Image (cartoon, rainbow, N blue to C red; front, side, top):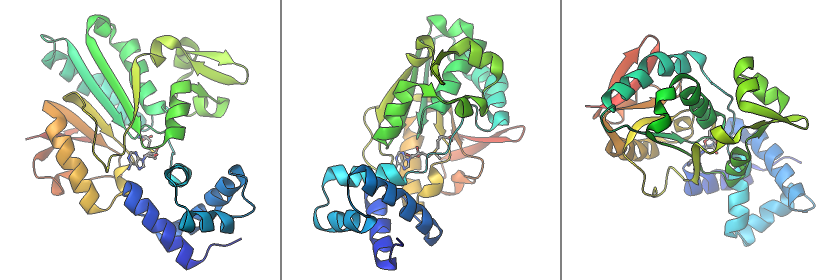
Length: 273
Ligand SMILES: C[S@@+](CC[C@H](N)C(=O)[O-])C[C@H]1O[C@@H](n2cnc3c(N)ncnc32)[C@H](O)[C@@H]1O
């Protein structure tokens, strides 16, 4: 069944209002596929019935399901390998020198999807920075999607997922087989604090940050929402703290004049001026 333009605009409005996501007409097929699957999950006869329920009885529960269904969750371990290499060789060593006295480190992976990004950071810290064992390290990971957070907390990944980006020696060291899947070990799992945070709404109290990963999520927002988010980011970053966005999310300093570009090789990040 295809979705009418009218219904598509209705869904576009819901997503913009609820989570600030701007959905282009090119996502029509995605809306049809994902909402048809959602209708089936909810035991409804058709996509049409789901749309009717949304229009006549838009309960928080059904709205959350629509947001979860439409969130674009593409991610993988050590996504953008040069970025993680730069973190390992340049950014984290720099932060560690600066915080050596206080021995505290605060990192936030905002929009963590199914958890591969924060777990990649946790593995990096455990594998290459053993001196952090007696530091006070907070690694916070958040997403708007309760479904993705549940997956993240579970820390169970398919063979396909662990083969995407994760070096084999790290898989054998930090995961264990769990039937056909791979379970992240408890020592890594417990390093990450998962929270549900909608970036376009009020944020809970968060620590001042040394490192903020806001990767591959800003692309879904319009400039107004991006500016609001970046203003909050600017206030949360410690002096010399780093912000990194996705490789296609460039020129954030044009949306917030307090952010200055810091470049390390091909990797572009931001610090507060
Ligand atoms: C493409 S994934 C990015 C995952 C990871 N950061 C990476 O780069 O691999 C985008 C994530 O943004 C989340 N998201 C979308 N809108 C959001 C919002 N308003 N607040 C918080 N997270 C949001 C989605 O649920 C999805 O998990």
